[in-house]
Image 1 (tube, rainbow, N blue to C red):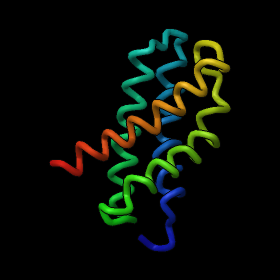
Image 2: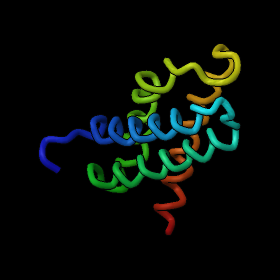
Image 3: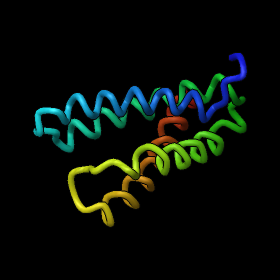
Image 4: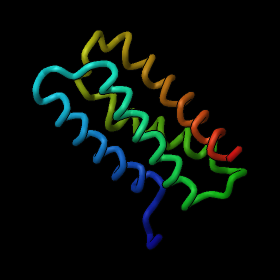
Length: 109
């Protein structure tokens, strides 16, 4: 990939995910299930993108670090349904865990 960094590729994935989130939230009826569906698609895409940049040995920690940076930049500023002081730390932790687990499942396949 010409000069594209992992963070830039993940940023593109997240921007697409944010557009989908905003489209689903536009009617004011966004559910937790909607939020999880959008997040699961994004995490799976992030793992696929990461494979373009790293070998399997280095991929898991690189993905987790990139997801944390991306979360801080793109997701934390969103006004999600619920209290930010509870949701933001919980979602950041879940993002780390989910990306690690998705990677583990794909690596085992």
